[in-house]
Length: 266
Image (cartoon, rainbow, N blue to C red; front, side, top):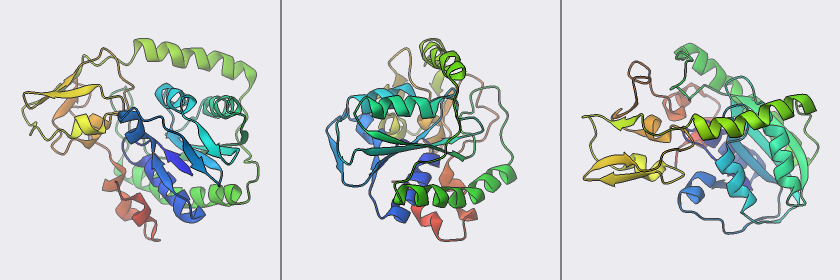
């Protein structure tokens, strides 16, 4: 079973490509999280978690959701993370997660994909750079699929104990102080479609008089609301006003080998 979390389509593409190559099913964790669904998941094949890297590791809400979800059947698990450049300690986190479930962890693979966290200081990636990353992704995913199909150990990047002990506390601290919702705002372009409310994995957004309201002080900053708004009506302070939105589906046309079908958004 391929379990994936994807706010803008990067991890969804990887997950669905893996599912196609491995003749397996893909399960959307984002929807399960939105619905508070922690019902058991069962698979005869290895469980594969596909998720983005946030602040040098696995997003903590995904980690917690899977901690509360019983994984039945196969006792083998892998993780595949998508990131702009650095996967941090995601592999060590995944190892701890699956070990706590008495599962054999096969390793953490990394797939470089376009950046989609655009409210920070990083500038937009140029379209040609985005396209090059997407073009390279199918080959990387195919190599990962081959390892998983053989249920072999994946030769992952080594995370030292020093790196782990330095980075992990920072991830938890960052969650507490750096994910406020007060800067999210819907501008006059809003058409009251409710897309932002539907895609929010933590159900932080509710529609009030046809306008989205962020009714909690913090969220996970997945940017699903901003990136999936069909009319660019959501801003985060002034951070997004001059930046393009990113969704994988806008660039999947660069794939010419049939993998574009796997990237279709549900």
